[in-house]
Amino acid sequence: MRTVRSFINITANEAVIQSLDNYLNDCDFYDITSFVQAFYNDAAVNDNGVSNKWSLDNVGSKWIYLYDYIYDGYFSVESALYYPDKFISHLYRLLSPHDEDLTIEIKWQDETMSNIGVVLVAKDGDGVYRFYESEVDDITNPLDELNSDDENYDTVQEEFMLKIMDIQDELYDICKDKIMSGQAINWEDAITYN
Image (cartoon, rainbow, N blue to C red; front, side, top):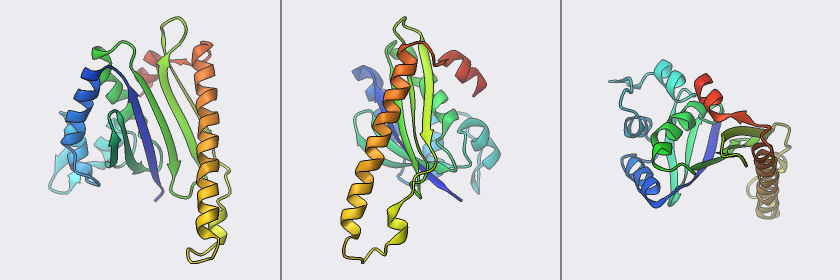
């Protein structure tokens, strides 16, 4: 099963960031159940953990956990197969009532680094929340041809990671342009779908 790491950056007022901190402080790293229970009041948890069906319906993937808490408003999660789109909708519902200028940015990559993308939820020039996602799914990972003990592995890895960041920055610019021009999906329509 493919694992996807999503780096989530919340831009908001101090009260929203503190609220997010409170949720994240209730999570144990790499623990599905604590993550879901921290963010959801209605999680279907039993002796085996979180129900896959519940997770698919409410998170958007079979599982999710906190991978890293980087700094205020910026954290990463890992999930199964794709970025957790329904969790992002839920996070928006939790935080947006407390900041009308909240922005959510997700930069994600699968474990092979062959698929990467960016998701942006932000206001357009007219103050309407919009959603846009952009991805690339045909990246060739040069590390696949190397062993970790090869002489140039570290250099190739560093160059490849810089390339990934550059591509994600370009995808972010595409998302931002689509949102600011009003060409992106109205966020209310997107969360109704999710």
